Length: 168
Image (cartoon, rainbow, N blue to C red):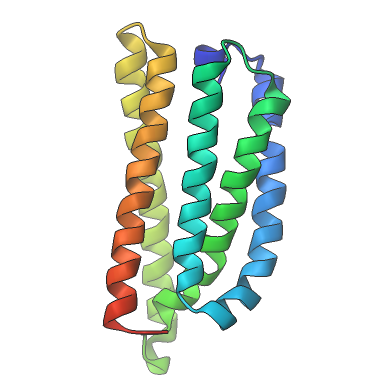
């Protein structure tokens, strides 16, 4: 946001506060939703995230210097979608682990999630820097949105396969 959209550091940081609040709210709601909708709530959460990313990409493309509060609106949608996914995801993953291996399963899940998060940040950061260095910071930002959207699409595909293999 600072390089591509020329937003001051404080403004760039504050843009993410509403995303975090939306994440917490969705996390609170997702438990009840997942009990009624099963793993479908994970797919719905990915779809909500894709809508937020599409809105963000549209805004960044349409407005040359978007105000931080304007950027926060699609990020709220994205954050809500993330909250819909993250809370029930551990339950969906760990539901297939036998009770006697619950501790080990939770440890493997937590470690895998941390490694995946770190790898994702490194990959998206590397993509941004590679394109930004070529002199296209806004294009780099849009490419990162596209990479996130592609990752979410792959997640939906995997969740659909998981859902067919083991219904909730």
